[in-house]
Length: 200
Image 1: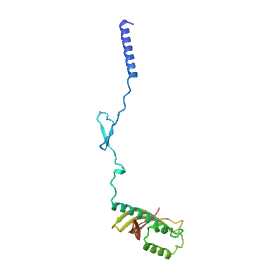
Image 2 (image 1 turned 90 degrees about the horizontal axis):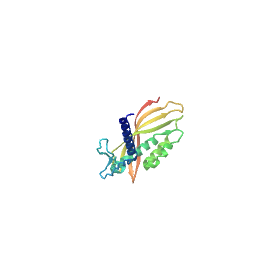
Image 3 (image 1 turned 90 degrees about the vertical axis):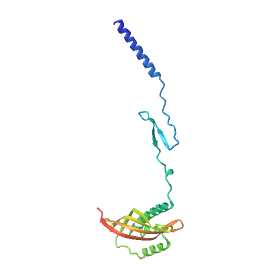
Image 4 (image 1 turned 60 degrees about the horizontal axis):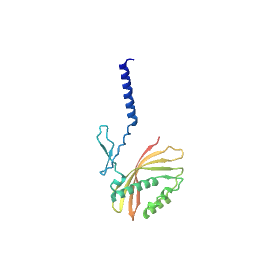
């Protein structure tokens, strides 16, 4: 090997050794520290081009505006009306009007008397009969401080025998509520239109 090539090889080896020593002894990079923000935003790590990024913190439930008194009443009426319609409209000839008994705490005294009279006068069907009602939508209307009307759109599935084909009906239930103290009680309940379709 010529003297010139030997000098080049030694110089390359020294340079490679110096690079290796620097690589393994260099200090580790410090993690980026994100400073807290006081203006409702949070700072994100810088983007690839070095520009700072920001994102807005989504509002929490505590930041939502509180419901007004009328909105609270409407929410209460809608929940109560849906529950009432499903129980009131679900019946089985095997249950002896249990669906009406579970709702007694929601009756006015006048409506309780009408329900009890109707149940006593009702004749049991000759065979099995059952209907299950599901509330689909509730519309509250004519709301005042002491009374309100709720219209509940329901889906009702009827069986006229244990092995029969179920029938679907879409029917509205109109409920009149009156306020007694802090409670909204049902004073009238009336089934309205009915559309029947055979279930598959």
